[in-house]
Length: 438
Image (cartoon, rainbow, N blue to C red; front, side, top):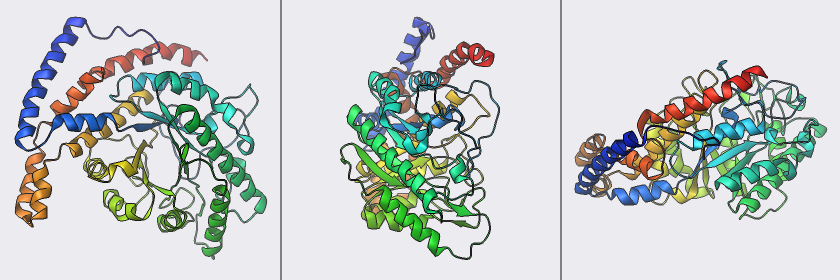
């Protein structure tokens, strides 16, 4: 996938590493087989799980609107000044190609409405249209990718007071309803052109910094606006509708209109997918526990995988306990077909391409660990043997899942281990001069 020739490590070194990986995998397969796990089945399943990479990691949520004023706001705060931010669609796609070239599997890319392309005139959100995303479709088709989509209800003068779809002014609400309607049409266009349904996820930052006198009226308006947004019937084979709640945001600490309770009830009553962002809940809440609690009542779930060190701080995803727990639930029997996975974080304190790679590979490892769970754990629980269940859960932590992950990388033709850093480093070196000079 790399857009330029990449010499990589020597052929001899690559061959030696590949042989070592294969030998380690053979031993791991035997060890897992003794525990009743078919590693080949796990690898086949993992290869079919797409992860949607968030385009906004590559440019610090700036987009390509032209003259559009305003900062992200609404709880969004990109930190860091690492050089190399993508400034054009071509640069952003170039960076994404580099990241995808070292992430095993076939994945997707998640776009916001502010990432369209025009003839040089500033983009308007209330008139955004599919033609502005043709370049993304052509690129995705060339690489065999699917595309997902989001309306951008922030960083705009019409969102300056912290309200959009719940705004008391009918004209402001109409502006954002039109924007979200057009976003759904763009998503349907992406899904139709690429032959894969595009998830269109609606999140609004609406809320109050201090205690509101009336919480009911804004929520009534938000429900009415969402109904208007979803009123147009578009083919389910082309798009999947989702709504995303939040605990609170910067400038909305006292009341979030689209809270978890509100949008959970909305998703259930309107038969929409619900997005669960791992950073949008209280730090002591288990997002993993929510999957099977909600799935019986909604068509499906969208997981936005993030890492909130202090609430929704959107740190790069790492292989921690929270990620392992969520991934394990996502691949549980009967759950996987109803869960879609996307990344959602933005970090400008490190190389942006590396941030994509670290997060996506961490999620891939967590998914694999869940797929490799020995069946004896569930069997012990079924017969009421909690002692054996606990003991087997602990023993499973020491199984050689890392050797299986390395084999997954080898089979998909991507670097095993930390070697991927070399390719990303060469990409950074190639692009540094041209981006610094502009």
